[in-house]
Length: 511
Image (cartoon, rainbow, N blue to C red; front, side, top):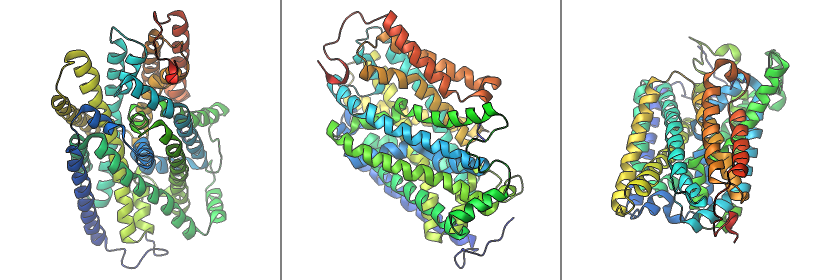
């Protein structure tokens, strides 16, 4: 998808030029933060006696924990690192990303959450693939195997993007190499996720979600105040010329339309993300979904438009000429850390930097857990050893977490792409493969096993081909054709090849 050396004294706190003080404070804060989440992992590990405990926290997450965990996991480092960088280079057109994402989040909580919570408990499903197999009475395990392969493939890219973001942030602040920063982030996430499962992940996500929200709310307001208000912001952007104030920028009419459609289409992916729907499955009861959706949508509105305005206010303050080799901003995805260091008191800047690391952790941990569940539950227990003892399954889940994390780290080590682009690719693949089949399975009783399988395969193939063919990649975001093809295939193949028998439990729990 294609979307479009400094000295500052004004607004900076006294003594801010002592970079060493900031580094020391950051090291202390990261060490303290790391200690807290490691303790959470160890405490949660003591409560994981069964695979249900490890993967779904025994379905006992309250609405606040479930909502904050779902939101923090859903946005990852791209929200604090990737989206502000995109807004810096593209201007007001990035607002469509916020509109698309907030709409997608609301739709997912209204159309998916309650039905999926009810259905997965009724079927005893621990994973998304497990639900599809149970819902459609599968005997060949084709749905389970196909879903697992798709999850593991795209999650390696997604996890790699989170480690890459950690490397960028710690490189900027601590002066260590990006690889060393990735190692620090990876080790922390892998430990508490492998140890504590979803319970540890969800409680650390609650803390991480709060830090992210503070960063995204406070930083743009502080910079906007320094600029002199909204009028001054618009005046600055207007003075730069170009397309920074255009809501639909592009070299041609199609380029403008494509950019807007691509931004809105990001929202289509929310209902198909395995690591997000796990929260819907783990929330305490279907009745808690109503409170959870209010919390999640409120979080999203503040966070998304805060991230976009970090980019816009940063553009107004530094100017577009500040980005480039040898300039103030060598990499557009280091904008947020630069602004925190420039405008915030030291203690708050340190908190915001921890927020960027927290954004990486809150998504990587959920993706690692979803990958582990695909291996331990969907492959080993369901296909290889149905009578495996619970302690062995929990141990396998932990080893699977470590294995996927190592592969993701190696991919990040070799990556030369932006965090934003890597996330969008994995997001499109998962959203197109699982979104339409899940929506139809929950709300259309005629959805069949063959229809779901065709949706999985067609959505995945279209996204991979579209992304890797330069002409198509530049034409339209791969989520749009992938999602539409998956939807059509699921509908058509369900009608042509219906299930041979009717299940005793139909969609949304109705007899």
